[in-house]
Length: 596
Image (cartoon, rainbow, N blue to C red; front, side, top):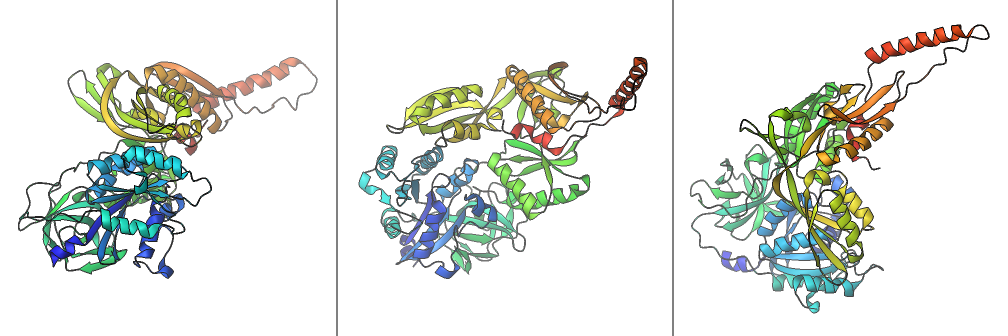
């Protein structure tokens, strides 16, 4: 029975760049196979979070099991953003086929390329699909040519659909059944299943989404994780149709969920291997890695009394997001807060939005930074997450910063501007290739810190929105890095300090000081804003004082009376400057994220 059953299983995922219609196609497939009734259907059905619906992106992947004719189809709807590329690579490992969705008006973009490479690496059968052919801007011939040159397939292999209207979608289902191979039979004596996602449910504990590779997992089995060494019980197993529906057992080749009694997703990370405790496997499934965050930012409550609420909220979020790492932080200006590590800027944005919405917090978020490796003269190695932690420069041998390998895909007329942008960020252009007659692929290396704040926005503006960008972490390289400090009224504000390359310190210091001048309000005394490296100032702006006209009551008489009153005022201002406190508003801490 199981064998026959296995030949009728098709495991596939949908890969695409953001906003090319992946979730909409998933909606149509659910409708066509009758998995979700028409009256219960809503747009982006598999995207559970309000945030996903608003931004129109998939953040958490979702598997779903569908029945079609005699076949069992398991679909995984993957996230399209570069921050989640590790999760995407694990979901591809759980499948035998991939539906590649390309927008017929926009064509191939960087993330499409990245996902295609991942799919080819995982040895998947790729089914190319052109979506949005009903739009007036659709250019089917041009985009078909791009897909042909990328995959080396025939033009007739490409399916033309409109996921919105449902045109051409039944052919996609037929093609999946025909082209995607069934899961391979396994003769392994032990059970192994790949975790491609896990999340924490407040009522049920940690729920794993798995693909069974060898053997089977039944309800009530004792299970253990090979990478983390955690042990638990499979309290329930089953499939998602899209709601959970329990079965007694998950067989080889099936995709489903396991409800466990684990307390946190840190015990069952994405990419880990699940096996049975009574007859454990020794070899892990390939490809597991411990995902390290490489963007860090300080999160502070608007008022210190909400610190405990912020801490509790982040602890709750981290139960279902094993990539979140955090530690308490204290700043003289902002008070108590938490320093959090993220996979990228989108990940940071999502966590910030969720803290504000789901936990009703008002937050001050400091400028994002990356981590640095430091070698000291005495041979010690340090890893710092923020510029404020930098030790005394006299003790430092070298500072290494993370570099990335990036790819930009853009129409060929923008290549010059893109290369200029990369060089302006201290990047090195490596290679220039062409996907086809119109599309250029620029590969480069650059320091991550320089791309954190507004690289993506600048890329979009210089390429009129057509450029797209994808990256992966490369290595840590020693550079001439310095800590740039900012002083407000002679006092150093640690929360504003940043690490920069020596050659960029002066220019950046000037622009930040100018932006601070706009956001810090005027006081009754003059406030000096300065940027400095070591003990040397490289930039300065002054916020001039409010001036009260103290001579209004004087008319006629000797000029010395007037001078006397002005001298008294000047003396008072001097005293005020010595004792006065400068109020720094929350916007000052995100000044680097502000556009010019």
